[in-house]
Length: 126
Image (cartoon, rainbow, N blue to C red; front, side, top):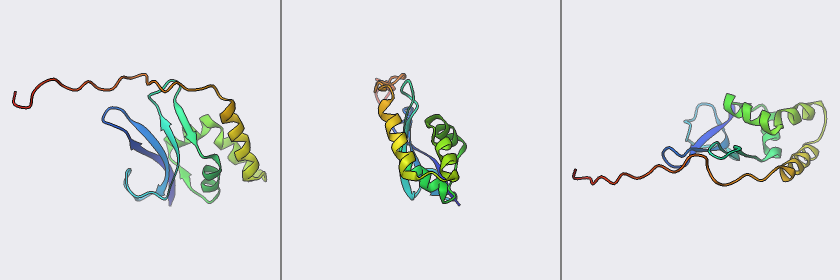
């Protein structure tokens, strides 16, 4: 079974995630089929970038989103567009609508809410 799920990237204590399509049996950071987006929870508001046409394609061929990805798809409106796709609208029209909505959205500050961890000043010999 194919799942749409999060793959953790980033430094220790500075997580960000890629939204990927992978086999359910693979490890969290194992081999993937395709990367379709990005999620950074450290910015305010959260940065969510999804390739809408690819997400709709994978949902239409039976890929199941994880619980976390389901929440992200709901926030971006992808689940509503998928319901409209099932009723007969084209992927191209829905992807164009998502692109227009993304361009019209407010800019997200690249500054993160949480600072990077401070490196220890202790020496290894102590």
